[in-house]
Figure (cartoon, rainbow over the protein chains, first blue to last red):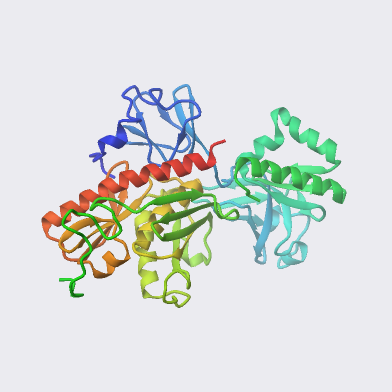
Length: 232
Length: 239
């Protein structure tokens, strides 16, 4: 990967517009990993784009987006990456005497220390408060560079989930569920008479009457199906 | 060489037993999103080979001792289904599948940006449903498509293709008879955009000129296959 492109002509000519990204690839163009996006001169590499020996290179499969000088890729499929402040729904995957391990559907687990847990917990009594498999609504407190992350349950509305169901969709589809200014979500809540909490990691807590829950589930699977052949 | 007696697999006009010319590859189809529960998946047929690849992750690496603090680990499992060949494959791992898993993992490690996901694991399951010849190439190529489908950052796709020698003629993409009775086999893993190699093996002997010819066949075939991969990725998910 050190300089000296041995690139083959017939493959490069199509996308190799000397004018840079605005040459041929623009707007909703689909790209795949390895695609050459033109000269990096004067452009900023955003999400899913890498500068390699003076050229912009696609790292992910998705749609090319151009915002001012910044070139990024909106991936077709992605995993959730925790960021501090995110509201998340996690499942307890393990516990020790003084902390819980929480699975967030991310590339790495988070820890929930006893001090940030719900109410008073005695040392060694973590399991009697929240056991393996329980779902919790919590907030990401910090994420370190090495990807060790901490979640907290201190805050408004953060709790162990005791009723309703937890549904999961691809995190990049959240926008479609929430809609502009929360409009779609508000309508779904009103029409199904359910309480819906959408977490940033693509999980949502749905509580209400059985018919309402089933209705929400159908709507969700419809959204997933429309966006990717038969997921969920 | 060869040692299997006189098996004529290519005639004086350069037409092979299955009607292909020396540089022609077998027909290929690629489809993504075939395993709904997986993060990314791919089904690839190549001649009568068929592979299904599912990618899961990046996710927390278990057991913890396999975690790397500075990068993700790839967990590649190549497996041939018991019904994939005419004589039943004994289920489970064997020497050969371990070797293929290892070389596939090494090849993919050089394109996936592992350092973006420290302490994580990416699981890649390659299942060969129907095997003719060149299943490692099918597995590796399909795995790179499945990784792209899973949205995992990579510097390039990987196209793997093999050329070899039959009856002293260098030909591209050996089929079963040519692989069994031929003199040499040269599978390569190619990054189609830069022309760099991530995987190279050789079985049998090739002279320098033959090697160069096989190399050229592989490089040309890689470009052809790359187009199909891009089509499968972009066509399958366009909204």
